Length: 528
Image (cartoon, rainbow, N blue to C red; front, side, top):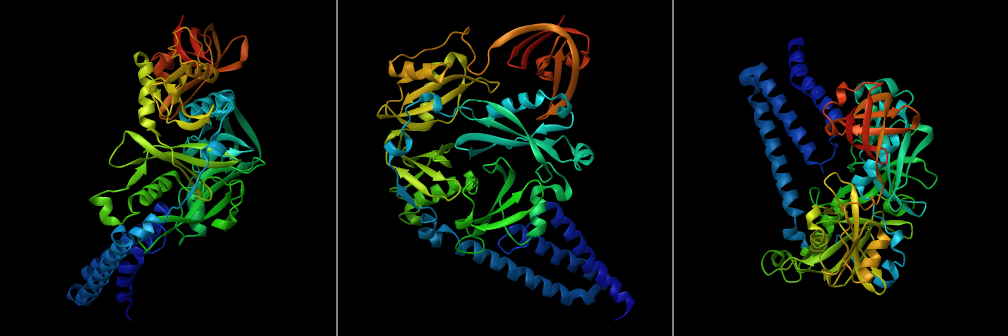
């Protein structure tokens, strides 16, 4: 074979292959026939190589063009057959059985005798509490931020959200990667207590790492042919950090619906990867089944029990999820909660379901209640002049009856009020600035609309004056945030977003300021 021909082969096939490998390294597309991205890359490689070969060989490349065209055509036909063959049109019974229920006992599973034990801190509030916590350590804020993950898990019998710190950009990763990420944040979903946890061994693999330190790429490079979902940050019962990546597989055909078949458990400190089948996953692991997948499987089960045509035409007995969900910890396991309603009527729920996020064990409770969205609107309407927005509620059995509990937040995302709403008569609402007060108002039949002077349920607002002693700035969630202390009180580290006062970039150490604070978060600032 002549050197000239070798050049043509290198240009036509080796060079596109090198580009393809770079694309795979960047995009992390699984090398599997079950991935549409893999088929797209394969077709692109064949097409580009063929075009280059024809350019270099002229008419002599016609045979290669014909051969490549046949390969691509066969591939397209295979994809169509795989997609149609795995669709609900032909596999409706399989779709219906992708999730199976056992009957739950509402009285045994969800009786709550103490309103104070209900988790009320949602993701937004947890992020705020976590940001305040890292703001207390000035030497961290210029190098690290708190990741927005805030995974809700069952940890030591409690419902908590956990999130690692993350590098503030590429150059902060470059200068700090040798020492790793030294902390993570925990937020108790009941009490709102947050903690900045010091790690004995730092985190070296995370979502904020670059190149091979990226947790997704780390797993991909070890298992390039395996499909897996986005890894979730978790803790074992000793507080050690891990990432849990659900291993998924297509059902019914190589391009059918996705289901979990196992999990990668990755030690975030040393990168050690352990692969588990579903039945062998450790009990401390919670986030194996992604919420979006679970919600989709609930709808599959509800739509196709009586066949594909029934789901389109008569829709008899077709049900769907409530288009919203929440999490609750029961017996040290994390469960996804959502209501079930008929697709032909959205006035009420016909029941609800709890689904174990590790095992997908599903319990169905046949209990007729108002829909979660009706309850949310009722609670918001009780204090409509305030314009508060409701969180997605949870349903409990309290004093022998089904009751929804939810929180009401202002535009800034701060929890202002708590509410209990009767699940069968959603016009009955009890609202107050504490859980105990809301429950008292609910059981007493009184709807209370607190005055503006009532105390914030999380922290009290107050005014503080003084001279700025130290000051640092960092970008959090796309907005410049300043951390500062005042003279005579270096224990309190205040945080303020630039949107609070546009003059913040011009305020310096030594300037006198008057601030209005909620805890350590500045909600008003004036330069004196």
